[in-house]
Length: 189
Image (cartoon, rainbow, N blue to C red):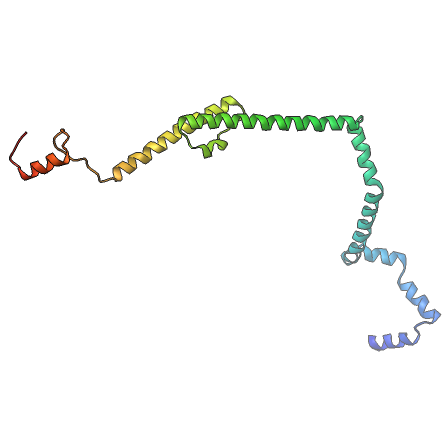
C-alpha cells in the first residue's frame, strides 16, 4: 500500500473519536518542545516572539517610562523651582545680549581701523575677534596681507604696461615753442 492510499483511508475516519485520539497522540507537549528546539522550530517561532516582545515593550514604555524619567529628573534637580528656571533663562538672555553688544563694539572698532588704514570694509566682519586685543591683531594681519597683495598687483600691472616715458630735455616746452623748433631744426635756444 502506498502513502497516498493510507492518507485516503485516514480521511474516511476524519472527525471520529478514534481519529482525534490518534492525531492528539502524535502532537504532545514533548514533541512540540523538541521541534521548537530545532533550527526550523526557532525560525517558525522567532517572528511571533518578536512581535509579542515589541508589543510588551511598547506597553511598558506607555505605562512606566515617563514616571521613571520624572523620578530621575527630580533626583538630579531636586529643587527645580519655576523661579530658578526663569532666573536661569534671564541670565542666559543677559549673557547673549552682552555678547551681541560686545560684537557690535568690536565691529565698529574694526570698521574704524579699516577706514583709517584704507582697508576693504567688506572684510571687517571676518576679522572681528573675541576681544579688542584679538580684533586689533586680526586687523593688523589684514593690513599686512592686504598691503602685500596690493603691492604685488601694482607691480604686475606696471610690468604688463608698455608705456615708456619720453627721453629728452628736462625743459618744459609749450606747444608754440615745439612747433617753432620743428620748423627750424638747427636753431638752438
